[in-house]
Length: 273
Ligand code: ACO
Image 1: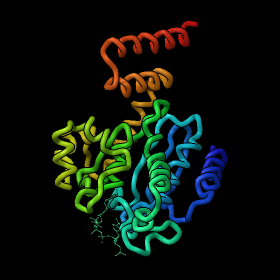
Image 2: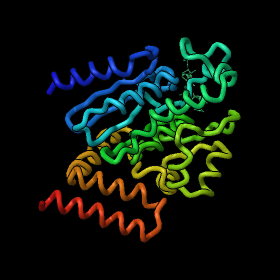
Image 3: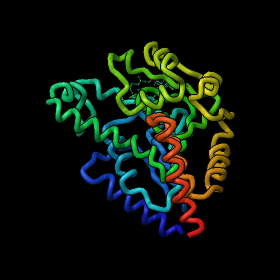
Image 4: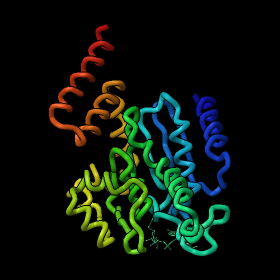
């Protein structure tokens, strides 16, 4: 097992660092059916750069097939302070440019770069896996959106979610607006995004942003407990059910009933031949 894990890590390092700056700032570990991504720049509160998003996308592209649960967490006191603020300086992040160069770029170049960054978030919704954000401390902007990209959010009691983009003259563009609206409703999403106010643990649970809040010292155990529950159900049934749930909102009741039937027929065939 240890050798296989080392190979996974080696594969990851080779795959996601290809053509990328060294400052992706992530750790990635695979233990059987569980993968853990750790944002690992605690001294900068896990601020993220294009290299981080590109590395996230690389992990998604190369995720070992056996993985069923992906945990995303942050090293140190904060989940993530969001985008690295150097991106807003003329100098930018070495090797990665800045938003002033992005503004100067043509629309197609910007679109392409944004799609690469969004790809780092989108794969966490794949039906074949369940993603869990284990969030302690600040989850700001791009960090909040990373937590929103996950299926479940288990949070420490010091959590502080903040969609800060509007305060900086920006919009949230890392896939966060849709899950936010789906989780908390349109009015509350407007409240959070248009005020850039901080949501603490009690409110986060109350409005549906977090599934569970625990004392900080219990966060790892709470995540482990959730993983055990998730791994206890049938793998293929879980994927089929996640597909159904994720597509439910875009379908009519009739379409959803038909989709349930199609998934169940496939399940019955798989179970009983
Ligand atoms: N980008 C770059 N560096 C950062 C960032 C960031 N987003 N956030 C924190 N850091 C650095 C600080 O500059 C500091 O570095 P230094 O030790 O070299 O001076 C170090 O991380 C620690 O930060 P502190 O502010 O001292 O930590 P504290 O725990 O007191 O506060 C907090 C944490 C609240 C997250 C604060 O750092 C902060 O407000 N950061 C900026 C958040 C932000 O505006 N993010 C952008 C959101 S919009 C988006 O993501 C698209």
